[in-house]
Length: 296
Length: 233
Image (cartoon, rainbow over all chains, first blue to last red; front, side, top):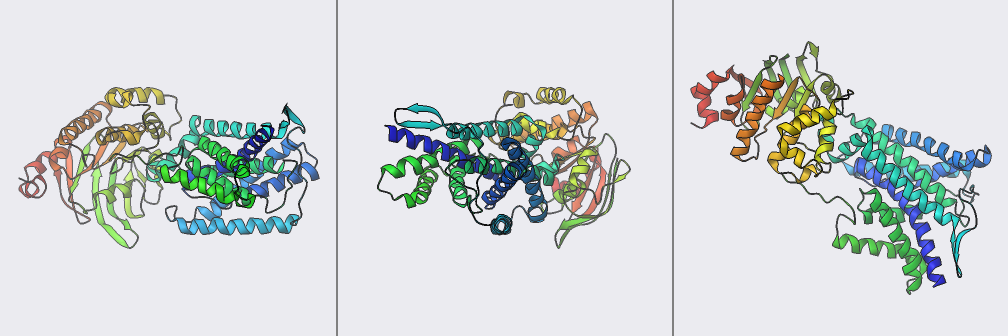
């Protein structure tokens, strides 16, 4: 029982971190209907920015996180303007190649600036345990990550559903042509999505590496991006709450199902993909995705 | 209000419009008739800044050629595209709010109530996703959404397309009524000549990128050549 609870708590903390990155992917998917393969690396770069502000400038950790998010939002907006907007949004191949190129470039850039050695990262949540049940412990870190994920989904939902720019963003993601016809400036609206995604990604990477068992290094987000992509797809790619459910499911596969079965731990990634395949087999638009229903 | 001269436009290398001249006066309903492929849709897309154009489009004295769609909407033109162009994943109400995107006044809710009154079915379904509406309802939504921007000129691209005759009849009667009640000028592009000429003041016939005939709607209805070509009698 204790072992199960510990594994459950692990699943929740990993899953919530995947969910945060998945939410960033969902924002980009809503904007451009493609997976931004550079999302994890952008998030990693943002986490380095947080580390610099917190540990080299000695600013308070959460202020550093906000500075990092704002910084990466600007970078995300810049990437959209220079590398994404010049291309035809309906032609996905060039855009996919660009995000793959960005993946490599940002990873290399981080390596050049900060080397590839693991770095310490500021603590974002109190150390110690919030709850002890027998031999099982729920750490403040786990509580912190899951709260961050839920809070982020809540804030993004309000932003998308209750603000004018959110309305424009949803309009553009629903029908590009009609959005232009009602006077929405499509470029800046999509740019807003990229900025928001980059900020959320940075938050995700920051809370992920804030786990005392992890350190910050340029490749820290590579695996996370794969888990997060699976999580986003599981949730339906265009649903923020789907990203949370998807993230937690992938976390559960990795931390609960794999340890209880003879599947070697090294194959947990593959196990996650198998779950994804099964879900998409029965529900092609994911658990919470918008099925394309259109009556003409 | 709208003065078009020597309008050329197309898609990439393919030129569709070969120098159109026409005008629309304030308060009028003008119809552009034409067969499939004559350039009707392209004409409207040229006006609303969706494609590259050459020539001159003077709208309330301002030149539109070279301006983008976002600016043209803000100058008071609204375009209901062919195939409705609703935002299928958004609710009916959000579709209407999107229509008012360019507005900064605080009468958006009043306008929404007004169009709900004209199209009560939209009010009944205000929480439903636009994609789940029937074709006729989507067309009403598309028109109401365009009107939410408080346009002075409304462009309608084949509103009758794919709709049952009885629905189309009703739709066009509402257009006439909206034109009379609000003074909104309308430029309608249609294949259904009978219906369109029935509510229009004037009409033009577009043939392979040229205006071939123009005149008062009543004259066009009685013109033998047009009756043969577009009215099927």
